[in-house]
Length: 368
Image (cartoon, rainbow, N blue to C red; front, side, top):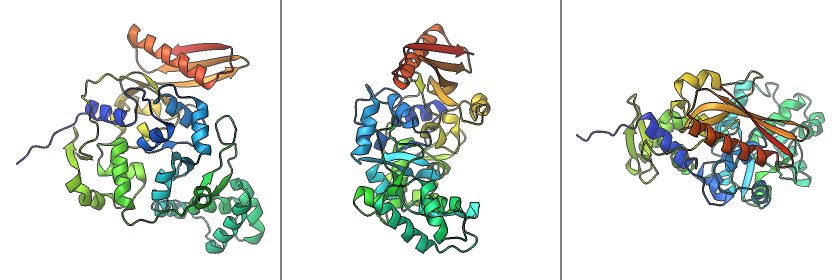
């Protein structure tokens, strides 16, 4: 009987970093990078910029705006019902597959308990969006008189959740205005979205490529899909399996990168939301157990932005701007050697200059 290989925490960490392009900055196009990592969470407009700056060599903000305007990438509701920047191909292939998960979210929130005709609502929303991109608030305000049984906020939420929409890029600093304006995805992409019977298995394969090796719970956490275990069993002949330190079965693609556990991992600054640390049911492959509690939220209720040292979350960061001075605050959860501090300082200064290019003075405020 063959013995199953066990992958320890550091081995899983290095595999994740390799697939998320965080072991070394790559020379590749923005569109290819966004596809490779399985999409970038984008609740905060600047998050994809930080994410790509940490992954791509020589990345410039205008590159992301240009590829969005070319419609090679889109921004809209996707995995786990959250806003993502992702390749247009991935959105077209998988957005309809994710609709049952989004429907569950609406049921939990008990929207439309008064019996709104949702088919009529979708027709009305599409008719409006054909004429002009509109914000969610404007959609709700415009449609409210025709659907008096629902609150206008509920109308807007239903349309954003149940009608595949994408945000329209503009020349705003981070590519999209606040509030963003939407159009229907099929209109923006000039093609219908796919309803392929094999989409679920293909999305599982995309998951393993982006965040594997993964347990069935990890795949479900990443995607929001139900019925993951039967899909993995169907795919088992095409996959390789391992165990983690707790004996849980891990699935992976045979040819996916799995670097040595002792592979060097340089410091990396990640955005407030990033699939690197939000995709797994067990996040100890990226967040050390002793730091999970303090990393979850900042004092103001916002999530701390992660700082990776030796591949794991060992600190947090933020940026403030006062007149012409931009300051990056680095909170270190541990004490580091001088060489590591020097690396962190170099990376921090480069990041603050990237995010605040029109500032004239740049400061680093580090605290343990």
